[in-house]
Amino acid sequence: MDTVPGLRELQQRKKELLLESDLNRQAIRLECSRIGYRLAQLRRGYGWAQHAWTWAVPVAGFLLARKLKTRSGLLAKGSLILSLLRSGWRFWEQARDRTQNHEPRP
Image 1: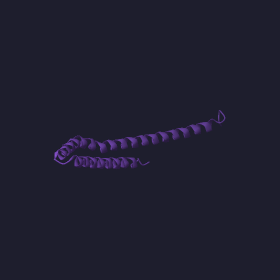
Image 2 (image 1 turned 90 degrees about the vertical axis):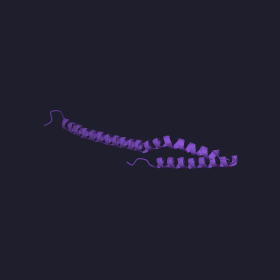
Image 3 (image 1 turned 180 degrees about the vertical axis):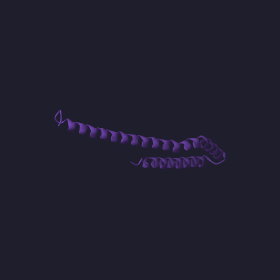
Image 4 (image 1 turned 135 degrees about the vertical axis):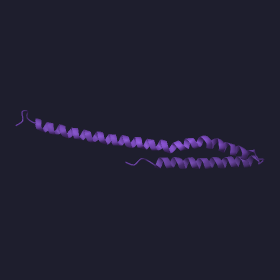
């Protein structure tokens, strides 16, 4: 016999709500760990690129300067620079498309 009418239903509802909140906490914890894992992947993935750029850019500049130093005409130098810029633009667009298409899976 209930001392207060409806107390047993309220206690049962309280237990259900506590279980539901525990499940929600676990789901949030799981999502936070997924986000942390993905961020760690991104840091590892782009870490090598930052190191590669620190030595690749000066080498590319040196090679480009040697190529432009030859006695070719202004039109040939402009054509070379234009083709290099076009190739760099394509590479940048492909890299951007790859990063946009790699959204995290649920």
